[in-house]
Amino acid sequence: MKEVRGETFTGKATVETDDTRFVDCRFESAVLRYAGGEHPAFENCGIGEVGWYFADAALRTVQLLQQIRNTPGDTGSAFIDDLFRPGNYIGE
Image 1 (cartoon, rainbow, N blue to C red):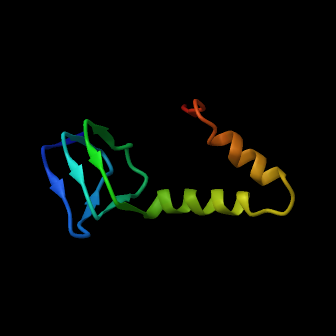
Image 2 (image 1 turned 90 degrees about the vertical axis):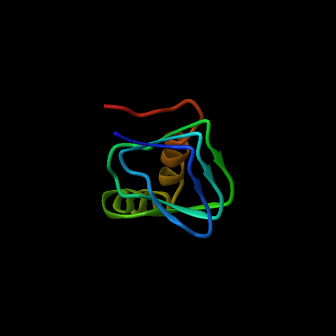
Image 3 (image 1 turned 180 degrees about the vertical axis):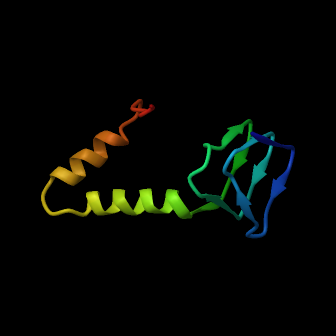
């Protein structure tokens, strides 16, 4: 995993987050891009006004979750609510 230390990202910079550990970094007005690789790690980082950009496998996963959430009835909503309830982490 790549490590980035002590960097400040501002001015709408696009920051690739896959397979990266950020330590003591600051994110202000940046776009954090995640494409479905190894999860990024953020240690002692300041995260202000940022946007997330999903691509590739990550984008397809987000789109699938949106489809599930938007199905008629309560089934999709209940599944998504349960999936993202605090303390619930799904692993392999």
